[in-house]
Length: 396
Ligand code: AMP
Image (tube, rainbow, N blue to C red; front, side, top):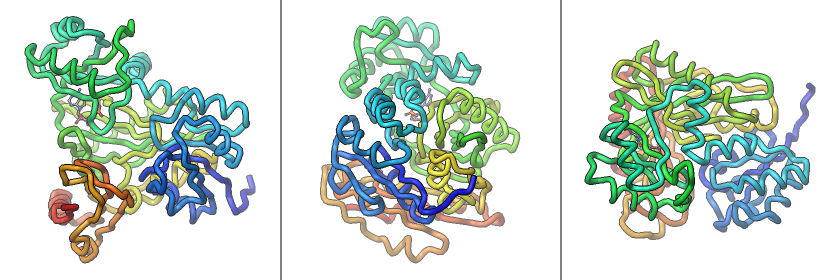
């Protein structure tokens, strides 16, 4: 096909940092972005053609978005799936990935069942609807375990570890209180409980489904604390055979998903080198931010190429990279001013990515720093160096 520029306009539901980085990738491609987000001056607003200020499931706003765009996509799981589906049908503007994919993924229990049915290795899990059912499930699965809200949990919110039977009641209450998606009385269970995986490492693969091609980015290692992603190390410090197995599982996951785009595929590497799927995000993902500096094509450019049905870019790694999130380190909610930025600016090979959020609160994702190394450097040293830089950044 003889493509011409200027390219298509892509409408994005959500105007957070992912949309901001999509906007940064869109400009050189000659694409235009429009976003819908309820927060005025959302992170994406300075880098997109226009932000429509409205809720993610506002029919009128999504209709306007669809009418002004050639393709629709989303950067958050909270996009109103049904509204998105019907607006797409009415206006003829396609949504990628397909809303059915979002439907499958937004409910962790449905997601795990679908993947298990497709033969993807997952940790043992059960749907549970009461403390009693939770107790019964753990009699089978054993302790410890992780209780998860089926919907609405992200960045570790909506996950509660269970060490022993004494924790059952408190854990169940926490899930019901913390997660708006919990629907008591659901015949298949309001929440899900999963056997605790005593993992050697957490890995992530960004997979991409294009028009008639698919690919994966190199396997990265993800380091979480309090269930929130802190750092990624690329390439992952795992055996080449384990990395290959992770890639194969990611390719199998892509088989289950409908529609074009990039997918964040989060995995556990067990002590004996097995790979288990943790969860999928139907969009660019925090574990793929390293690709901006570290790969021939970034996950954001790749997502836009895929959504528009353009040929995919090469996913080869340019150089080893470490990425660390800049998280809110204050107690309350306050105006955001990041200090000691010179530390990043003065470090060779370090890149700053600030998301432009007006307010900061505890553990809010405010930006990230990527440090590019070379093949002669030990990734552990690169990680240490990047952490030192990050630890000096503060909002206090
Ligand atoms: P999630 O939001 O479900 O991806 O979970 C966030 C983090 O919690 C993961 O990256 C893991 O560090 C941890 N986690 C989630 N599920 C499990 C599990 N079954 N066993 C051990 N750790 C888990």
